[in-house]
Length: 501
Ligand SMILES: [Zn+2]
Ligand SMILES: [Zn+2]
Image 1 (cartoon, helix red, strand yellow):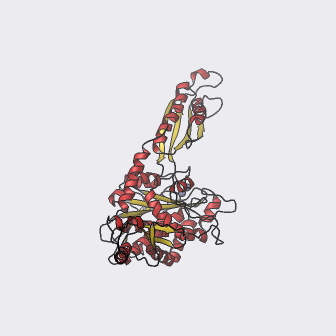
Image 2: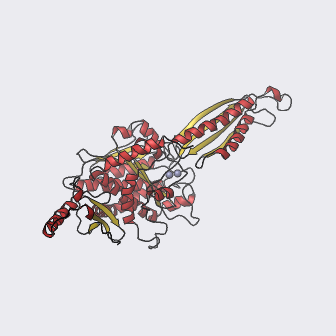
Image 3: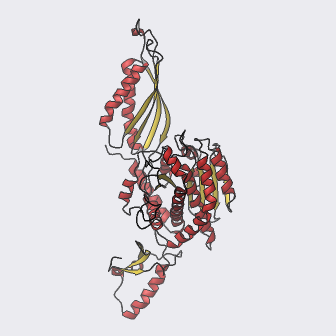
């Protein structure tokens, strides 16, 4: 360990966390510091100490040491990690059949009947949890709530359940469900086992149809999170890239474009017709031109679903589905104005009537850095010291403590409705790697679906459960941490409204 003459260290073994605080006395100011081998240590700044005699100094040191024990060290707490680990390892074999059942019975969005039944049945066997099936007008949405009976933070975990058409659980949502279940149960168990019990509430939301159906948006609009006065939302997603705490996804909008023209004989009297396909091709070409003028991060996708009836009829109807993505909702709005102009150009050029129907819109995910700091410290304590030390570990890695680096590693051009949740409340959507198939394929590939059903992937998601539970317990037990989380979220939201052009 590097020498730091400014600080006095108290070893991890000596540390026993309790819940009082040390106040604002600068001489007693302490901070927690993570050590790569020994774990967290409490550190007291020497330069803050007054000049005093040796005996008085000894007495003061003892007093300080006692007070140091009473600091709710932020954000790491090794005591909880041991408890969490023990608990999650203890329920692993009861979680495995749940994970397996969901994985082996892939269901499409809003039709996750088997997953809904499996998960709600399992939660009903858990002591102290109130489970509600088919909530907020969605057949496959559900809630499970643990209430400590004492007012405190309300922490939610989202449980995704849906698979992809034809390629099963190739997005690994079975692992998301398992990770959230394990985390919520571990958190509640530790809240209950402390005397007095830890105040607050834990809520699991079964969130249908992430793959294009926007189930979380429907739950937001139906008041699910508001009704439970949820303070923050935690979840995870498997992948084949680096483990990360700060995952940013893109803002996304998709829409159907239709042009209505007029039939006519394409050889005898084409001038009597209005060519809807020409309108769509003009728009498509305009989009191709626009693509050169877009910003890094802007994405325009599209396909033509209807291109007319026959070559000898002027095409009266043409249609397609298009999607636009950008780093933020604010940038997406700007880009969409330009994309819309391309479609209008098609209508102006041909005289066809344009109808645009919005299909789905996902906000970009804004990860909360305060929550991420907590998660990272727990995660880093759980993964092996060195990549590849264990035979089954190759892609697992520690998360960089530099959050800018973590965020760079966690950027994806994909989108999720958890993005919309992150605009409603502080959110963490961590990424974790599972061992991919032989071609190293990531999500939305059959190989990944196979990988998501393996024992190895299951064990990795239990590790996520532990780090998420640690994050939740930090918020529940550390005075002022929830405020820090919310302040960071407010600042993020203010920043999200700005877009550099
Ligand atoms: Zn997906
Ligand atoms: Zn997914």
